[in-house]
Image (cartoon, rainbow, N blue to C red):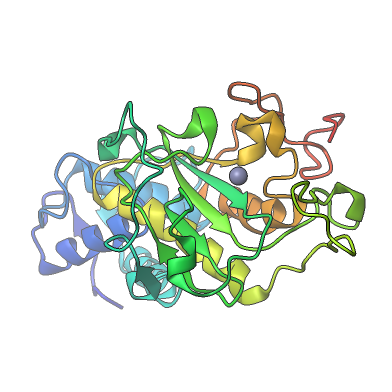
Length: 294
Ligand SMILES: [Zn+2]
């Protein structure tokens, strides 16, 4: 137990700073006061939202007026679980070596507060494990099939990965080629420039790669929150480009995109959401969207 007795509003107990840092790391931003060591309304509000996420409080219940020992223990446990998942140490930083040629010309940089989304992609090729092979790819993060996470762009750089979603989003490329609809090899995109002797067969999604992608989404959400912003959405590239029908495909979307919605509370924008000439999420990817064609 991090504390023995409830801490009430106005408390400056040393534990308050720890709780505030843990809330920020977990994605419950404290945009006005940050980790200031004072238990005020902002911290109690974030703590209340955290309790709802843990099933320890109903959204309609009165907002907490104190941090209880049980709530503090739950916060500590969630923080420790986070620490075992995506931590900064797992990211290979390739930003200084990358030429950044895919940075937006019109809007090269943005404020943290303008970052509101994550976009998932499949590479539809196999770039492999060497960071230098990714230098031609305009994307913030790539996830290799061995589960490496390579960062190529700053989060505050706008790069050309997702058409009309470039400005608000951080992009993640998941290496490999995947069927548009799992179990339907015909929905696998085949390169037209090269004549392949035998057509590609869809790849599986290694567990280490899926876990690295999830950890990266979590890390982005936490890092944006720690800098005063808030990621609220996650999108498949398909939603912003008609030419990216199978991007990233049902397997990645269900394993990472739906996970992020269920676990982190992100939104995909809903059944009809598109940007530019994109296509809505099909029923084959998300059973909520009855009637949405592939
Ligand atoms: Zn894409």
